[in-house]
Length: 235
Image: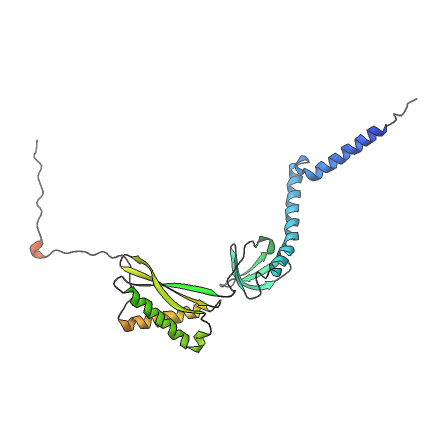
């Protein structure tokens, strides 16, 4: 006759404790099971985490008013005009045409180029002999003349100004700047170029050409000397 072994309450509690520890290890330490299953679980957890974080990230961007429809933004390698804001992604239209769909979880730091105002800067190379004060006053006068035009005055916040930026060999670089609303700096820059070029032509000042040149000197007939080869003494 086989007697059944009675299990004590201590052994039951011990086995229950061991099973709980094993289950906890499976959840907390995935590599303890197998490398393949741990890799799959990690990838699944990362995907689920990204999918869960994207809507919350998008809501955070919208609540903080980071961008709106029509804004030109830059984020990482993606940049363009915001065309569509969906539940999980952001549609950006690049200036060359392509449409980028960027998940909110990968946006990161966002640079918005369509808010408040823009300072546009451009450089003008002039000969090194020009007077810096004369050029500064000439550009300032052009900036005030642009404000007299009603169409231009509506999109100019701070008028055009210039100052000597640096001096290179044979050329003086003047930097001009003007403050406009976002997106209007391109037409203001084109108009400023046109007026500056016309004013320089009237003053007889040409743009500098700092391309490297090689000057060859040709001696006159009476300066030519025939060099006789020196003969070394033969030992």
